[in-house]
Image (cartoon, rainbow, N blue to C red):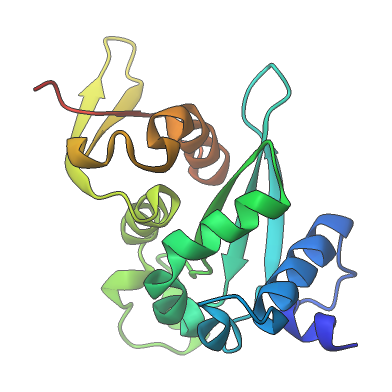
Length: 193
């Protein structure tokens, strides 16, 4: 019964097995006597988990979605929480993402006078990019427009974090998850020294 408070679905849809497993893992971290982040985990809960195929070899990634109101707490413990969830879900990469709302150009129909800048499509996609990369810092972005009109976003990550926690192995995962969530092509690399 207590495990379900870690998973709050907005639409009332039934929870999938993956969502239940992640909620149980968060609950286990919270009640573990040896966990150093159990006080912070007590305040967070998830709204959903998406399991995404990121390579043809059958590798999958878990994209855990948090409500925006608890995102500040999640950002503080993100590295340690990802490490804990990786132990429980071996052979899967784990990414965190906050739930954000995109307001279209007809926002006045919803009773708003001004559309906040954080609710535009561009702003939400930039925030998703920051969320997926996680604790790794983005040091540069380049947009490459090909002759056929397609766009490719080249994201440069901090070279100091290249060896940290297998970030280099996650680059393909970042690209696949960003493509699935935003339908935009992106390549994640480290700048040349």
